[in-house]
Image (cartoon, rainbow, N blue to C red; front, side, top):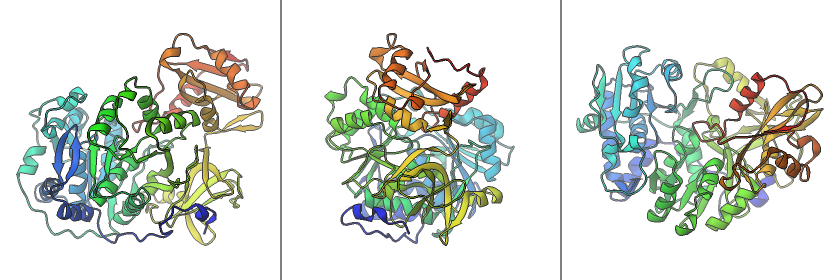
Length: 562
């Protein structure tokens, strides 16, 4: 068992934590009994109490069973953005002893069809702005029932917060075989059967991003979901007074666990359907948000708001996130704005979010953190699988209670995802990194995201972190460029700050970098762009930029800047 980090364990927390032997829904039931009148959901200022949330969850669960024929273990697609419908739908599926399959709401056509057919789902919960890609699937691909909601149904109080047009849109009369309006499904008031699902039953099946083929469903039991929601609640000192700003997409495991951990402790989930820096700032102030989990790109945007100084952010006591390393320069700005350090963590869809978190009392920057409760993490040489010592880069592997059961109907891929080491079954994360002498883990890059420049290994994330210190760079993504002399060389795709747009030159960035990093890491090419492509979870879509670059003619090896 790796325990080098135990010397820096948060005071007062045990190193081992018992995982509840219940269903995920049981947390909502307990919180609703304890705090029936407490606000569970704050949706642009419109509030839903725990008592009302449970009532609607139970009614929808009854409808799924009684009208849609959903049975124990059946998969039900959840196809919507952050909203009361997402929370109600998620817990209703679990209350019906079924399996929630959260689908990226950006998926269309064959992407949606793949998830539907692969999961074998006959029922889908969604919102009306997504009707167009749903319609051709009804009656085909096994889809028989669709329950459709309108976000505006839950806007019960006046608001001056910025609302996307599709959120303001009134309910549309969408009809067809198998289609039921959300409000009608709830109003039917059907009572669900007694819940039978337990800790070992399949509960949630998020799909991977599909970077190496079609997306695969990650099978999580109630137990593995509760492992991280319970761990996060303890690590972040969540209580019934926690007010969590939910801006990360809930179809993604990190956003999902913000929801689950908050409901488990009886706190309030403050929902924004789409990321909006102005809405986020106003809600932090108005709802007295105590917990703010976000990724780097969101926080870079948040800090660039010229009205930042006019808002009271003092209620925040937890500021954290993951997904991409937080650059030093941005971390300093965040600490100035919030008076709190940014607490980085690390996890995967296969681990239902964190396996590592920085200790709040002693965080390190650009660091994934230390292994949390009952997690055994190691670094292995990717070729020999020998264990690496401190500061030696290898593949990070993890063993812990939050590790998934495997990929849905993919026995070969499941077998390839694991290895046996030191008498245990470890998940291969596919991420390269190392741990330092104190047991803190650092991610250098994906196993397949490395630039080999004349035999020197360049980790793009490291170069990006250094470039973020440039005062005129707002966002940056580093990719590899084919080079006939060096094999590969480094290219930086840069979004200038608003003040530098039109004046910043690529050559100036190259010159600046030469003074601050090893020659082989310096970008030989810089491309200035208005924005970087993003994934549905808001991360920079580096793979898309790399694929676009690979389609271009090979470089002749000359330095360039555009």
